[in-house]
Image (cartoon, rainbow, N blue to C red; front, side, top):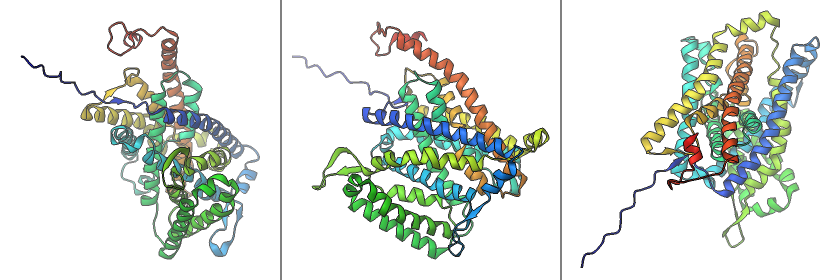
Length: 447
């Protein structure tokens, strides 16, 4: 009797971008809607700021931005512009901390196979723009300090553009953009903490870490209480978080880092009293739902209003800014360096790991995502504040470059992705046929 050996199955190659679970896709869809509104408000307030700063009433704008309030003995007498950059953005970075922890604990980034490509792509989208910038500004130490300005991606702005033009783009492409932006934020946070901290005061940072630890114990131990009692977070955790922020601010580390640390302490998974995890949303997701409107609707737009207000000095001043190597370096890095870094590293990683591109996509789609990632607004403006003093002309020129590059990147991405969106709309309207049985709809193969 002849025995038959079972046929050996050919191992399936991983597909990129990962489509994610249904829960992840639903959460991403909800996040897209919220970030779209926030992106619109961000743009509106930035436009108001820059128009007011260049109007006949510009003195009123700068007087408002430079108005100082706060308690001087605690080193908290800051201008309204500084409060927006150091204080309000801490709310934004708190949500970044929540999102990062959720992705690495319960999201698609918890698995190496789905994390490797967006993590590598984000790293390429940081390193290559920095190299572009340094190649333009040369060896001048005063200019080299701004190398990190074009490395950041503004998730709210990018998602707002994507939502307006990408109604039929595949969900996997949207998830890739958001995952890329989340990892990009993590790298930006690390850059700010490591490269833009000159001196550290030991006592304040130790007190800050102690306060964060107390915050973490309360959030972990009484997670159910804070889930069911929304006012408790405002009355207990918010003041404690404010104390932690003040200590970190006094330590010399940029105060927004406090927001990230506090976000990391919030539990992601919901557990019953018997310790078993269930399907209910964890405290991190609950807090994200509660506090994102505050960040997207108030904190980030107010920061954009105060930070984007640059006195251009008329046409002559604008032309002068365009000839500054800092301006040229930032524009080139964001508009060209970002997509080159993201797409090149993505291609290299997929080849090394043996990962195939999703049959529904083309590499040109990822170029569009790379261009969207070149919209560096909120964090880029923050890094500008840390790189150049307000008296330095490069300070305003860098802001002009960020605004110009963001508009250019958004415009080019819109043209490209609008064309791709029409293609995917035709696919959605066509009858999906797979006559050759290869698992790939024929309409993709004919496109």
